[in-house]
Amino acid sequence: MATTDQTLSWLLGRDPSIAWQVMRDMLEAPGEDWQPVRAKVETEGWGAQLLSHQDDDGQWAGGSFVPKGFDWDTFRTHGQPWTATCFCITQLREFGLDPASERARRTVVLVGQNSRWDEGGQAFWDGEVEECINGRTVTDGAYFGADITGIVKRLVSEVQQDGGWNCERCNGSARSSFASTINVLEGLLEYEIKTGGTTESRDARLSGEEYLLERHLFRRLSTGEPADERFLDLLYPHRWRYDILRALDYFRWSAVHTGMPPDQRLCEAIDRLRAKQADDGTWHLDWQTPGSVWFHMDSGPGKPSSWITLKALRVLKWWDER
Image 1: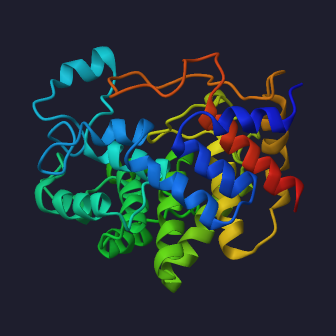
Image 2 (image 1 turned 60 degrees about the vertical axis):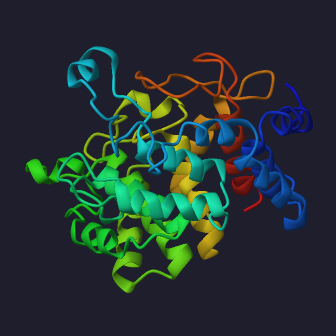
């Protein structure tokens, strides 16, 4: 198996959005070393490529959730498009675009002024009605400095009796889902990191964490069987989807923020993640969501994924150093 040094060298040569996170999370380089690399996200590589597609009004593809004039029949035949504003802002956050940069600040203002949700015409930073969308909007808004207090209050009021969230709640569902829960948890954690959160938001976050931990990140509470075999398959970008690596990276992030030790109920998911490492030291993309994108960042399913490899390595580093 390739050494970690070889794998890290491969990652460092990929894209600024990958390289700066390797320097910070894996090499523990000081800020003065990785911050100049992070700044390149705006002007080089995937970050610059995505920003080149931004409309003059701050949006992407002329819409918040789907492109302007999108034909919904295409959704059924070719999959959901991922080129509209909400998905692009999420991707820029994951790239690490500096929220203090002029480009980021201008985007927040323009999107707030010009982008309206397809569901009900609400202003973008006011959110809409669906928990997965609202969770991601909180994550992005908190990171980039938008006022998303109203969405946080709404999400806190929507915790299910079993501790998590479900986008089908408005259609009568009384059970939480893994995907909705991870989307909301990421948002509440980012909000807490940036603002300190509220007693209610912190309690809701802990409730959602317990929902996933009770299920060892992928098992049904009722039978112990995997709730969905696809939770064990790794993908990136996630969009709204759930897998064990997304959950593990969340719990790593939460522990770094709170100083809490790793929960032992993560052990099985950690073992599953280790088992998926390829002989060359990387992790492969198992699948990807269908639908139009501005560009792909990896070579496709079955090939090494820089994003999945980065996330897997930093999760295992955190776990092994506990």
